[in-house]
Length: 112
Image (cartoon, rainbow, N blue to C red):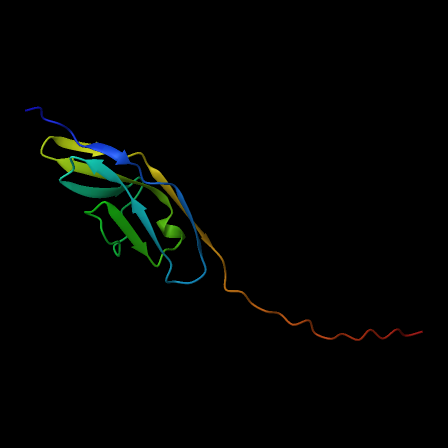
């Protein structure tokens, strides 16, 4: 019987998310053959504390803010070791709440 490392078969994809309220969520997915478990890593920081699925093939980040931007990858794990996916870049763009401004009426008086 041949020992086999897990093989990443679906890489997480780069995502750009536009946020206009505090309930926006985003999912990153990966798949691997032969994986007994998964984990997720963020390149230069830690995975946000409210993340769900940090030990599954689907990482869900809720209430995203620009602090969530960065590069994430999944790690597929089995008894033979670990395989890392490529990094996926998550970009968060925040749109401020729209404000409607009514033009105020102005009267120009010309003095002669």
